[in-house]
Length: 260
Length: 325
Image (cartoon, rainbow over all chains, first blue to last red):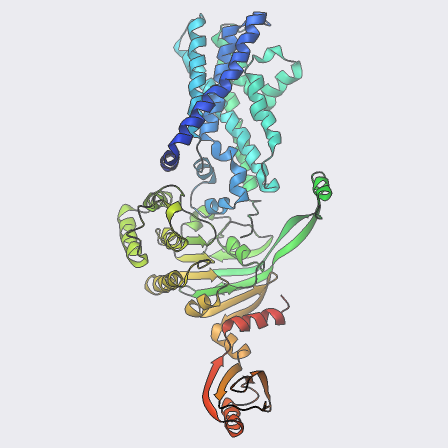
């Protein structure tokens, strides 16, 4: 962990060599989800509510998933951009260093510019929370934090699986974006508005539902049945990363390197 | 210290014909060919040796280095280095080795060299005291004082290579793998790098395995060479023996007073002739050089005679030809 921060420090120093580009990119990253959010806003402006969910409830849902996404893009960018490491053979270097490959790949890249994006979702989150009448308790606050943290872990897990594919395909596969970008787009609305099979897929296969829809019901006081179970779903969802790491370690052994 | 037994490795390569249509077809269907990169390679290396690992492009040099440094897992065969299996005990093993890839950097591109060194210290968990001592030694020996604080991207290739070598030695490795360390360097940097490699080998007893296409590197550094071609081990032994086996031919260049008649001396080959100079190739196993010169002096009025052994480069070219690689 300490080593990871050392990596961050050196990457930050590198990034600061290109300050103008940093500010421009951060600025751009701030506005990309902004347009999506504006779309959400106008949708509710027109229709008022969707399947019994009102605007601020959905905004909360939106903010949580976007914050998780932006944070994971920030910290797990090394995995997201992993095909680059394989294509130019940099992964060789990772393997000749006496540290875990996971830490080294995470530390190979860090998107500081995504802070713009995180900032935007924090703003949406605050706005939504201010306008929702929620009876707050410590447990609910913890649940909200867990939702975001588990969300980061799930996105990271998907990146890791996608990166592992690079060991066989060398080049990155865009197919996986269905699950990252697509998953984000879908999970920014409460999952019960969709077809049954979509809800099931994003609850049991890629468990976005467990960091968003299910605990959200608890926070908003809409649960039927067991509160604790709803509260703990983010923790269960975060287990998603474990099989991803297993797949990764399997993939490393199949690394073929590139000629030099 | 290093022991390879029957290492084989093959790559699966997607094959497709040229042309847009074929490229489009390859999106959906690909033919694969299996290319053997290493075929039953075995050798062992003792502590403190410098071994030159040579072979033409695509012979499998880099693949061998990658297997030995734990990057690639071979299809079959055993490899034990300092009691470790490089790919299974990767984390424990790589603490003991340093690797320099001539064509790839291990330094962080946009930050001063010293920052990369500090991060490497943390990656390898080098104790502060040891790090300081090593740094001082390396900075002195490789003359890095003036470039330690410049970003890597501003360094010349020669400066960068010196930093790369320093970076791979910060943690006191027992074995140093150098994959084409002098590629693209000018004569001065080349000599500096060679001298340094020699020095750490003698002073610290570091075992060095280097691949190169520059035979003068081998001549300056390695007593032992291993030659591979098409993934097969072809020669493993002393450089001197290689010379005496294949380098028995000598070239004699003679200058003489103008003589308009070309001459022929038995058992030799006339490589070039002009009225004032001739170049003759002699196989010393067939005829003695002194005899050739005696005969020469009886035919022409000699001014100067120069005798040269064949450069090692030519020997290697001949070897490649003989083994058809």
